[in-house]
Image 1 (cartoon, rainbow, N blue to C red):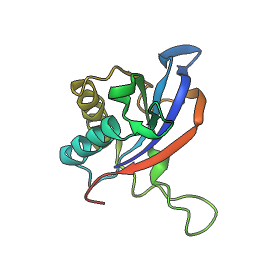
Image 2: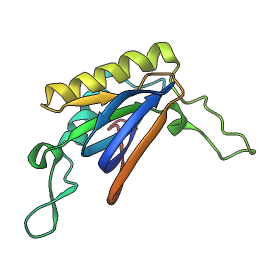
Image 3: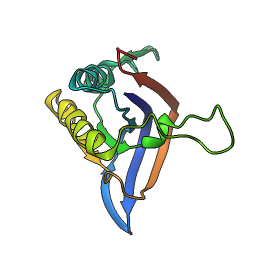
Amino acid sequence: MRVVIQRSKKASVTVEDKVTGAIDYGYVLLVGLTHTDTLEDVQYVAKKVAEIRLWEDEEGKMNNSIIEHGGDILSVSQFTLYGDTRKGRRPSFIDAARPEVALPLWEAFNEELRKLGLKVETGIFGAMMDVSLVNDGPVTVIVESKSK
């Protein structure tokens, strides 16, 4: 499992001219799943996202998590995170999980974040989405599951 975290001042997802999810500030998560991912991977990454310290404290150091700082999550499924560009000019997506595997894991991931006390908005799995955000910082990091 691979998640790109983008700290955001404002973000939204639009599908066919309809906003499906929006946050004022927090994290935009681009969530990629591979065919070997499990619920254990989902739980590990959700906990890491909730606890990673990407927000400044009173001294200006990144010492606060989103739970401590406050903020919401905008979670967007993103199979292209598993695009392999090593050969040729067209990425291979063979490592990306098939929809029947990825969708339940993505939903479980979002539910794990909610269980950790976070408000989670989403895009629509498998849809063509317009993602709009104001990146804060910019602060962008990648979290991968423990077993990878």
